[in-house]
Length: 550
Ligand code: ACM
Ligand code: ZN
Image 1 (cartoon, rainbow, N blue to C red):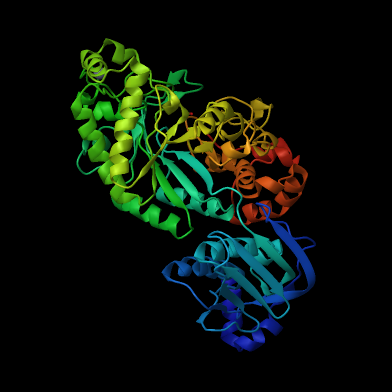
Image 2 (image 1 turned 135 degrees about the vertical axis):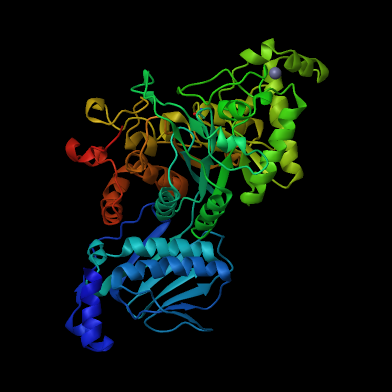
């Protein structure tokens, strides 16, 4: 409707007259409310009038700068029905958004100056420019997104901003339920809005293998489909086949989409546990060689990859070779969590490996697997992340530990001198209930993790200055046993992702009351984009929170 109206205007009168005769001025809002909180915001007098004709003047930049500028073009299309013009120039121009280089700034840092005569974004490179544009979008009055303004007021100010932690992540589990390419991209947009820079993509599980591997077609032919899924809280079976996977072309498309938002996709291939789907496809990978079916129950499964057999390592190296081709990420996540040792204890091949390698027990056998896979990845220029169980049986110094069972595992790893990503279930498990009133919520895995608790995460707790250096950052995890549709995935993610983002970006300045107040603005953006978010923390009626689930 908006577009039709605009075409009508342009069709009848000159573009110069449009602003005067069929557009209005959208006034600036009272305060500058940005999530995550910038390092400093200094309000000034006056306003910049953003118009359809406001160009972006690029005084420097490579092809990746186009990603940042394209983002802003998308915003201006929403505001005015057309993309901002981009001009390449040596010097800044008046009444424009000028992108300037400041080599003294850090990679993700930016300075955003808004004045009556123009806007200046200073950054070292495109990352900072992209984050400045994200901030600028949040500075727009919410009413601007109605799309009928000819002039949009942006309050004069100077913002100096940079992230506290280098790693600000979100994990999305595709194993229990899979989401479409468009839904994954939509989630990447949500991450970008929050200046989250790592997308940890959980691609393999007992209940489904979700990535095409050319050398092992049965991983997807067999391993991507389970014949039934649990109902209720893992009580019954629905008897309906469920499946899906991402082709390598789709993976490349998503990796590129993320790169255009300055998000690195970190794939996770679960090793050696949570692998029943792989074993169903290739039974020789298991200790007994038995033919299994793709798992149809949630939980921890005893059927895991057999490290006694050389063929298991050939398989893992082949799979990881294709994974490395698809994902340029420095890190590959190799899982490592919840690997029962029951089968290994009874397996002659596993016991032989233990003896041959001089290992003490099955915990050391898992460490042997982790180290061998890590060496393979290191030899190819990559690093590993593993869930905190990789600490058991001995861990190399070069492995990064993702603490999930509690902050204590991250503390233990940091004290050992390992890099750590804090994503403890006590604060970061986005599949937990957000209210105690669970009767009126869609079925969730359990737990109780309100927004305030997520926000309260202190990744540095109990660490001295030296140990703090090993904390790379934080991550929110969305496991999807109980999340079978994207609307529900958004509901569980938002607004807790906003809290994770603020811990990650604004750790040294975070303040829950200020955060709640600033959420008033970003939730208007959520509304504009149709994101489904939980409103309990904002004191809204429960009825608003209902989402469809199976
Ligand atoms: C996990 O939640 N098993 C990492
Ligand atoms: Zn075995």
